[in-house]
Length: 263
Image (cartoon, rainbow, N blue to C red):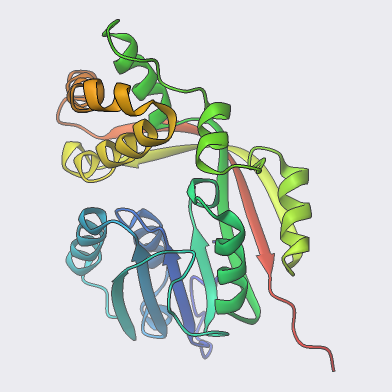
């Protein structure tokens, strides 16, 4: 986000064509638009994409309620590995805690490279541990009859076979292989915030369903899947009540560019 022109400082603003990929409930887009001044927002063309409809609908309502005047705004339900979006189109692509959750991360990286304009920037984040996974572990552990939640390492291996998204040197090498340059990676502690249980309910139970599908046997999923989700919701409701839900993450913050064509 630091590489975006948040304020115009009275200068002309170039068009920003932004894709918020795997956008979830729209936290990244909301924060971006809050950073921008009116002149920058008026030159912002924003697309939000997610494979799941409920969080995408939440994200759309969120941006509309914030009431910003943008050059263009659209939401799209689609697959990040094959978006059907145009090539060399976006000036910026954001992917928060996303690349390690794709079955075919190679296809996702190729798609990002294809969609970026030459010189365009992708900003991604991955994690070592933390966030909602700690509450998932604690909630399932509260019922001894439920299978255990996976460790962060087990989860990454299940979702993204053949990858090492918790290792910065591996990340840098893979981005270079896929044609990116000017790769920068910082590891920082971050706090993620959900507005409350309404936002939680359109994201985390769905994610837990994906975890169960990947990490439990079919027999375990059939016998315990619904109760695991109910247990998680009960645990989080008791822990956070009606207030905000805050999760700590150790995040790898990644930026990279698509090269300009050689003269």
